[in-house]
Image 1 (cartoon, helix red, strand yellow):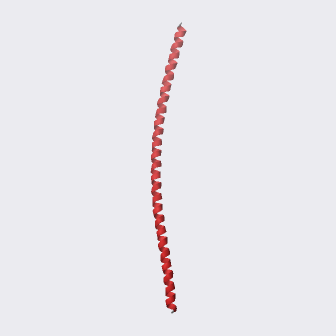
Image 2 (spheres, rainbow, N blue to C red; image 1 turned 30 degrees about the vertical axis):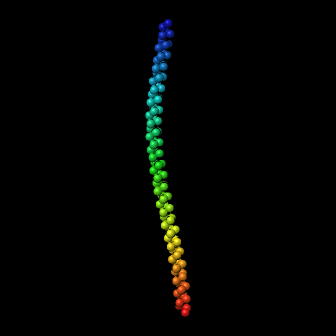
Image 3 (cartoon, helix red, strand yellow; image 1 turned 180 degrees about the horizontal axis):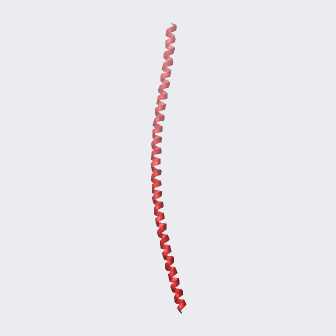
Length: 95
């Protein structure tokens, strides 16, 4: 009967030890999860900032491309005017 009591106490002791181990592991996992969640939040914030910055660059690029196109159109018009004036000058000088 004594060994049965010992076995029961050992079994209870093992269960308590296993429970404590599981609690410790659970706390470690919770802590790790908190750390990972913070990292995820930081990365998400960084990603949003990068997306915003990218959108700003796209907007700036579009504005610059539009301005370049306008300037090219103006340059083409000026070149046409110069060509026309040169032709008129030649006509006048030939007379």
